Image (cartoon, rainbow, N blue to C red; front, side):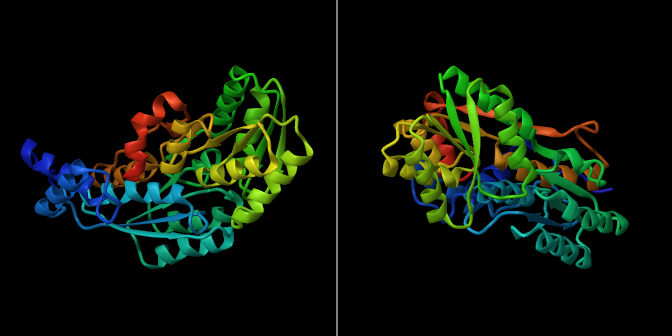
Length: 337
């Protein structure tokens, strides 16, 4: 069996290397980041273990340009460096195409697969084929209810219903009376669960508004049109960080006083919370979803370890407001929150 290397100095150097690697190519935010990058280059990005060079593939339901998945990948890539893993990534927002991408990894005989189950029915057969091929699977982000049934080792993410309930409770605290829940991907079970959870705890009235998430001008115009026709709307909740900015612009265009809130955190959202253009964000810590998925697959391959005890490993929700924005903004800028 492979042996894990020890030594505080060696591990410390690796951690510096992993952190610094994520900063290369990003815009500079000061001397600390430059120093981290210098140390990373000096360390050479060495793995912290001497286990075999396994290959893990991740397939998500991400559309093009969704910054949330950049953060997930950052976590996965950094864990892959530490664990001596060759990491592959592919995505498609069409469920059948996503299933075909999983099949392509099965054909490549990867050593582990990480996958999202936004549209679980379309993915069931692909996960069954992975199990038949003896490839361990971990699900992340969406599909917690189906993960165990489909044969995955565990699920890493937030419980979407609980996250939605947290939103409803936060809206109550803020005295909101009428809210829009913006769904940018029809058929995504996680999105439906978020809005349903929010409706469950929100004491006011909440309506769903479906938009085409792959067309940001359409997202903005759809929200703006609703705000123009219904001035009683005092809160808009988007289900992803990239859509919060479109909602802010829609609010301005409609002359609305509605508060804009969102699921997920990125650099723009952190800045918006800090400036007050956004009220709050629900952080599910996507960096952890990518990092822990790779790490747990490595642990399973190395030591047959499984976390969760048959239950999802939760990475959220955490309500982020202006009070925490300044602290998290630097992490968001480097792509880890």
